[in-house]
Length: 341
Ligand code: FAD
Ligand code: EPU
Image (tube, rainbow, N blue to C red; front, top):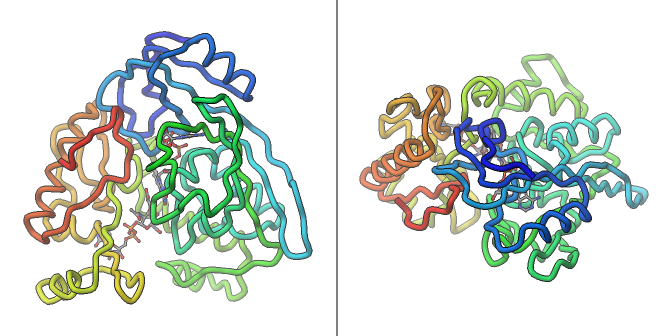
């Protein structure tokens, strides 16, 4: 176990904070040994640190999940059930599946972070969320020390949501996730610029690898690489509002970028709201709103987490005043920040 350990290399915002205690585990026995040797400490489970903002030193035990391994646990005529250790790197796992022609994860290429964190907020991109291919997960119950299995319906997946962020928050450590992947592709090319990207390359009958490469190219064109510019992807969720509220906004802002979710709900592009509030490219000290994607906050180097949190509060207030909409943060604030602002 390490003490007063720098977390800067372990969070994609690159915030320079320390953990009072820090340990890694690569199997459940190791996890249990660490937990028994350090009872009564506040715990933080760390994957790739790509959806976290540290606002101060962590005065407890940071546990970095390094459980590895990918295996096929079941196969049918049409599906293959693939289990991955929570500490596997998400994008490497996606590439592994593509190489084996296991279909369903290709639209989720290049999302940073670990397999174990993927169910936490039901990661999604380009028209696919992990709930679409999720089968089950195993998790260590901190209170009892037992292993529990969660099937899809028990995870209560929603847009950037799961039971592990709500009712079961901080109660479980996810140790592996099993996905039900297809043997035949069911390509999803209608979202965003995927089709445009394929057309530009002259690809008429795309493979899952072509889709993955198109998604990677689109992502690289707008999202900053955390190795170059600290960030945690979208800082806020896209707000989902009811039809009536949407009609009111549409009357005032006819160009508002949106997607119809259902007969009763519409999702607004928070990036559009932030850009049209004049905040895109805004810089406050060493942090700011990304110049190419207004939903992403960036650390230009040396920013403190609190400064980024303050910037996010300023954005929430400005959007509230202008559009009457309250943005919700997607990034996990550590330690948790109770009030909306
Ligand atoms: P961490 O940041 O380490 O942890 C996130 C949360 O999960 C924390 O609360 C942590 O305690 C908890 N946690 C982590 N592992 C476990 C575990 N094994 N058991 C229990 N709790 C755990 N997200 C999307 O959905 N779609 C995108 O398109 C997307 N694009 C991104 C682009 C960039 C450039 C970046 C930097 C981030 C992006 N994200 C996106 C956000 C992020 O990649 C995902 O949320 C990812 O799943 C986080 O994984 P992680 O391992 O880094 O989690
Ligand atoms: N837009 C602007 N200005 C901007 C940014 C976006 O006007 O600066 C508008 C444009 O109209 C654009 C629309 O917003 O067409 C949508 O933008 P984009 O396709 O970049 O996606 P997003 O809604 O900003 C969401 C996810 C991303 C995911 C992409 C692709 C959320 C909170 N974010 O972003 O996920 O990769 O779609 O599917 O849902 C993440 O969660 O960290 C993340 C990066």
